[in-house]
Length: 381
Image (cartoon, rainbow, N blue to C red; front, side):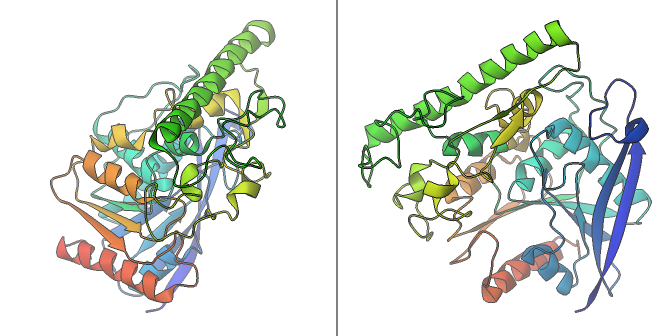
């Protein structure tokens, strides 16, 4: 089925006192999006939104639109750049998109389609919609979140539990000095030559490795909190500092297929060779600011915890994971599915599918049919 691509532009003004450098001139926030609109009318719209990703041309939204499902690829104020991203501001942007879909585009029902990092964002939004709890950011900066219209259903598609949780599972615990990328403890350097351990990793070694990952996240969080407090005290309330996080792709599961097992290729992650990605410029959370770290990467400071927010998700929910996914492994889908409060919830695994269904038209077709049939059974199509 053919569909049209309709570029959308959404502009709104943020209140005084809650603006940031991404607010634009005079506090204006300008957002872009694409409405993928099939010829067949529908009262239901799937909204895909990632904290920083642009999803207009990803296989899943395009495949669903080709199957007659109306989809909106909504973009936050941080397109393809999460170095200064504030999750609470992303929530503001998503709230405006949902309201726009209902009031301006004329859709009666909205389904949040949380893909990858959009999964925890969708759950974060639904929690705020049904039980508002935010008045500021983890840094203590005020944020004015408009009323959030609850979603009518929830899709968790190749989703992970949270940005902070995922990063922590990938952090390199061998880093000894955050200012010196070469200062590594060989006893915990997964990519040392020779390595400190070999797959299958002993359970006690792996437990200590995980504990050291959590400890490193906490150290960075403590530093960010202390540094932000000092900046405010010495330079004013809006002072900020950027910094680099080295070693962010050192998850033993990329080398040991027995950890969180699925059909992924050992020695690979979704960005390529994890040994290279661990310190490559494009690694997860490589560039950050103190405020952004506390909002999206701090394990104990970020409010966008998909598992905690899932307890407030009571609408029909479909969780799809891919058995060859080398970004979001099965335990993430398991934890999300268990945490969702909905009584009507379904989990489906697409056998052999990778994270993006890249060059897998048969797997994409299976996933699209799964979503479409699930929506049809609940009167959403």
